[in-house]
Image (cartoon, rainbow, N blue to C red):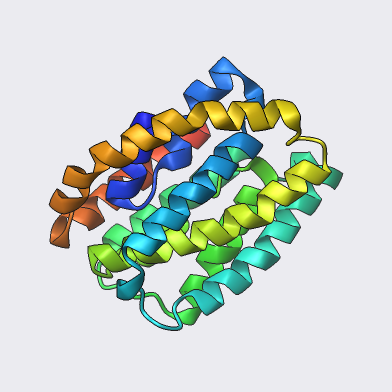
Length: 224
């Protein structure tokens, strides 16, 4: 959890990619409920740290797409899980990374924000892992704005998933205790992330987002 927190706070993304594999290996009950509950605390802090840098109006389209995509993803998970797969999501992420590289002046327009939010919501609703598409959509913004936007976006995303997990019986007393075991690692990671956040600014952030996103896509294809 320490490494996942450092990566998330420094780059604005990466919590699920870094934390999910070892947590699932330790106990599958860590995902999605406990990880997303702790992640909500982390995202709140990430957003609050850079809240003044968040551009006004940028989250409206993405949250609309997120809500619609989350509903679709949850519906697929319940009714027809074979229609969606992590490998498919991984392909979508790699295509997005390629487009971001080939079109370096891509800007967060309403269609791009809505599409990124929708696909992120579908991934999160289906698998509990929202993926890095939203980060790619806003990667041209200043580093503090990227972290602030992503913090609030994923805070809203996690707030949609955790109550549903509780209603579905996947976030009870046992999962609450698992959540508490993650808090010390979260606290240590917050302290260690400060120098990384200070260094990862300006033109350094976008390449990191592209690399983390690419690794995420490859990982989903390889292990999905």
